[in-house]
Amino acid sequence: MPTFLYRIEPVRDEMPTAPTEAEHKLVEAHFAYLKSAHEAGMVRYVGRSTERPWLGIALLEVADKSAADAFLASDPAVAGGAFRGLTQSWTTVFATRP
Image (cartoon, rainbow, N blue to C red):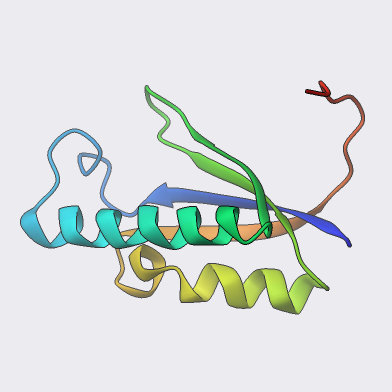
């Protein structure tokens, strides 16, 4: 299955340290969305920066670019306007094996 980079960033730079109540709810839904996809085996890696620039990344294993774009668009925090993002084709060069 092809792998895609899923990259997001907050629309409002202060959101990670001072979210509004609405942003907080969207981030909770976003976390549940990614966790469910991880448990289903679609998302292999998820992480975020802990300082500016604020970035979140995930590696998705989906059928094609349109499926990766649809996954991004369906993220509640992207659909709700708290995050913006992009997807790109990904090739792993080195990886640590468990």
